[in-house]
Image (cartoon, rainbow, N blue to C red; front, top):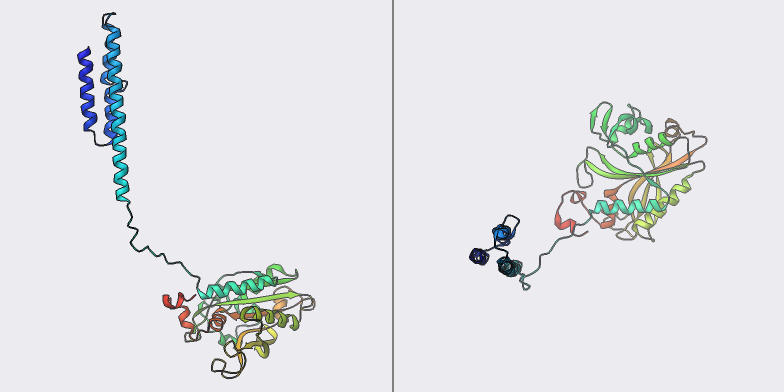
Length: 340
C-alpha cells in the first residue's frame, strides 16, 4: 500500500511539472485528488488493512496528498506569473510613438443656423411644429389662397407626384395644419422648420433647401407686432447694430405683405459689392395673415388676426458666414465643413 501511494505521488509530481497551462493542472487535480481519483481510490481500500497498519499508511497518504497539492499550487502560481508576463509583453506600449488623433465631428452650418434661429424664437414664446414633406395640393396651395388657376403657382416650380400630391414648396402647410387643429383657440405662436423642394439649381438656389416659417395669431395682433419680432430676430442673429426695413411686396397668403431687408453685414450699410452698393440685404418675406386663410382654417377674421413670415436657412447661413455660393453647403467638402 505504501509503495502504491509513493508511486501515485511520483506520477502526479511528474505530470504537474510537465503541465504547460492551467487547464492541464486542473485535469491533474481531478485525476489524482478528485472523488474518483487515484489517491482517493487507494484511501478507500484502507479498510482492508490490518488495524495496526492503518495509522502509518494514513499518515503516508496525508503526506502524499499534501505534497501533490503543494506542487499543484506552486505550479499554478508559476504559470500565472508566466501568463501575466506574456500579456504585459504583448500589451507593451512604445510611449515614444506619436498618438492616434481622433477627429471630432462638427455640426453642419445649416444645423448651426437652424438651431440658433429656433433658440431665438423659442425665447420669444414660439413653439416648434413639424409636418410632412410629401404634401397635399390643398395644404400647399389652396388653403393658402392659391387656387389651381392662380398665376402665383408658377413661382413655386413644384415637384408633383400626382395632380393632388407634391413635394412641399414651403413649410406654410404646417401653419395651415396647426390652425385647423387649434381653431378657434388663441393664441397660436409657432415656427415650422424643415426641408422644402423646388425645381431650381444654381449658385443661389437648390432643388432641396431649408425653410423656417413663423405664425402668430391672437385677438389684437398688428403689423407693429410683426416688425418688433423680426427686429429682435435680426439683432440677435446678426448683431445688435443691425437695422431692418420693410418693403411692400405680394404674397397670396398675406395682406399686406412685405420683404424684410437688413443693413449689409459686410459694409454695415455703407454700400459694397455684396449689397450692390445699396447698403441693404434681403433676408425674408412676411405679412399679415390673409383673412381668407384664417377663415379656411377655422378662425373668424373678425375675432382673430395674425402675422406670418418665412426665411430660407441657407440664405441666413450665407449672410452670417459670408458664403458666396449656395452649392458649397451641399458639396460635403471636408475642407469647407471643418471651418465650422
